[in-house]
Image 1 (cartoon, rainbow, N blue to C red):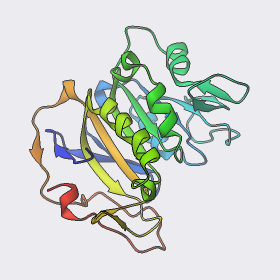
Image 2 (cartoon, rainbow, N blue to C red):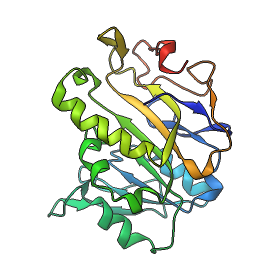
Image 3 (cartoon, rainbow, N blue to C red):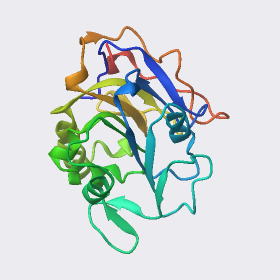
Image 4 (tube, helix red, strand yellow):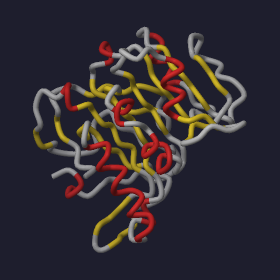
Length: 230
């Protein structure tokens, strides 16, 4: 389900070198807004989008403020499936910042496992409004655990109803590990493209992409076996 394809667009790198930079299809002219939950102290991705006229909505309870993105709308809350003093429901966040007829948003999300709660909570109507999803999935070391699998599988199936994978990149925070003869990274960055923008669907010949960079500079890089994309 994570197999990437050439969907008819060149990939470009947005964000900083190493951790915090992601490859996305070159259709950013289609988008007006980016939603970024869990940005932490790294906001170069949103700063790069700002340079081409894309406004970011950023939410993170662990951050005090966003310094290098002038036009961003920042809320000091965690994005989640419910509202509370420190959390904000993902659908309410989208609804209060956009008009009903607006679409083609970007979602950039690295929330250290929070994706397992946030993505199932997104309504299908809101999910379809995104043109690009950039999500880092975590804790693949638990993929052999039935409870974790039952969380992850429907989450990915939900996304694939409306999107195709156009790029994957393993985070080198740890070495690859093996489950049932399949090697997994602990964390995997995945870029999805909304199916309405697909021009073609062809096999990718090799990974990593020439624009990929290892996340952690002083750790050995890792490469996914060819069965992840071949």
